[in-house]
Length: 280
Length: 178
Ligand code: SF4
Image: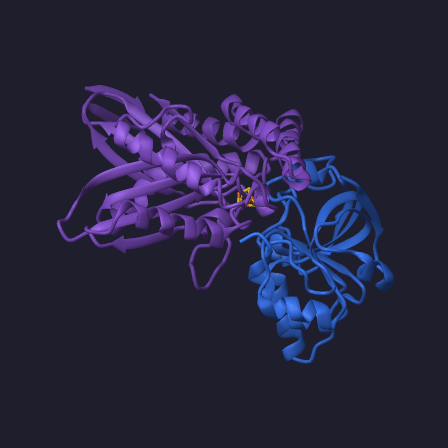
């Protein structure tokens, strides 16, 4: 049994929110620099240069990367040999959000009710997903998700006999229809299998994989590449102004499913891909 | 790529000369409004109340900035998705606005209205809020301050970059390619 105090979780959550609100990781900068060398269209080039410069200004002057500082989505994997001490875990995470958003002048974008729409003023509550796993550690991931890209999410329940090609066409349709709205180049999370709800959550969990790590199953690694190549032929381009780079990376998370089901869920993340993680 | 310098309020001649895809640097006064402010303007009109500001000739920027740190004019201030403001296009254009600025596509109705009112739709660079904030020289709330980040601000901008996404003939940069 290992004891972990909620103060430590809170501290790490605050730090992760701060880091991803102001700093673009080097591997993402590298992707955009690479794209810049591939694009010929002036507007595509201009967009990528501005995206890169935006990252420089944000970290140098501590101005948030985007004015939509997002919903805070936490993913925790808690080892079953961990005993959590201190306050309630949910309170600790939400206090971290409220504190970070106030302290770092981040925009508060959460309303307490979807129809009556009053801003809570703290960017809480956050959205928290918890899984219990083996071991005595806690892995804590955070994703800051803007509204523009979240609104482009999609789910389709395919027939089990539908072809992979028809799944790719669906994905292409969603990305083209979303066009400029989710601020491409996007990082695309795909949940395949499970139930409708599991596929949706997996489309976000898929995004937690390190950006440069391929899928561990070669079948899916190949499918990810195929989807990426297809999407980059759509011409949507950086910020939707046209170009060769619509998608920066594709991440699939698959799950067992019912004999009658084949759910496919899509989660689009904008070029301002703000995520972070740590193991405690 | 050549940048076209534009001063607000944008005169009719400039509006008719701008074409889809033109890259502009905008300077002068612009007004911000997003979902809630648009809704409230609509409510004011329905109730027959006078608006606390004049929109004639203005450029409306769809933005909800982050709060400024001490000593700063504004926080991060990039565009939000414009299509959410499509239902208000007729109202805003009939109040005399000459340009809208945000990110992403507009609906067919808005496109037709832009032609009818000889107005223009600019797209600026989504997710570049830190970069764009440097082009904003002053900001003050002129109405609806209870709406927080959704209040109506007057911004003075200098060389604010934007692309002509729909010109006054209704040509649309997002349409051609797909
Ligand atoms: S889609 Fe992403 S980058 Fe674009 S405005 Fe929203 S949060 Fe910012």
